[in-house]
Amino acid sequence: MSTKKPPPAAILDIDGTLVDTNYHHAIAWFRAFRQHGHVVPIWRIHRSIGMGGDKLIAELLSDEVEAREGEEIRAAEKALYLTFIEEVEPLRGARALMEDLRDRGRQVVLASSAKEDEVDHYLDLLDARGLADSWTTSADVEQTKPAPDLILAALAKLDGAPGIMIGDSTWDCQAAKAAGIPSIAVLTGGFSEEELLAAGASQVFHSIDELRMGLDDTPLG
Image 1 (cartoon, rainbow, N blue to C red):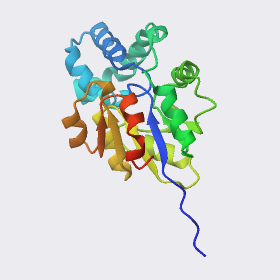
Image 2 (image 1 turned 90 degrees about the vertical axis):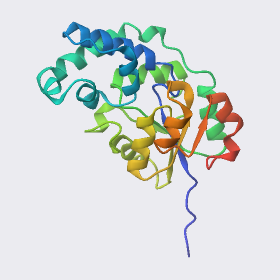
Image 3 (image 1 turned 180 degrees about the horizontal axis):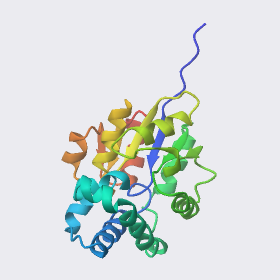
């Protein structure tokens, strides 16, 4: 007798998808780089937001800077970002999207490579502890996006259900593709529809509200 396959679960990125943090992080990285004598244009930093901090420094500067100063720059970025964190707001419709998914019987895993204290803050901000089945932090992975580790860690928290990634950056879509699952993207992170589709997104929505309205036209409906 065959066992019915569980319906797809939603793997939700947090930064830039549920909470409006991408530009706060871009400024924090700019200031951290500048403290260490590296001036990187903020627009270039933004293009790498969504990529994990373990990869971003080498991407924007060099492997040599990563090896020599990576830990110090990351520590500076974290401290600088925490001066902004009380200004972070949920993106409109973020909690309602989780409610919509739960109403449709979908498991919800929040996939973040942020530090545990940041994830705790976002869970409180979204009042999401009773809505999410589980969540990830940087402690769960060795490599962050665009490596698939974060998505695989989220999938491991499911009861065998297939997953569909919802994210805002090209790095989310690339990580989902590397993990072998489809992705849906929203424009809330500042990446264009064309870029997100090229990175592997199956559908792109302008906002969370638009995604909620179109949810039944996605595999999560």
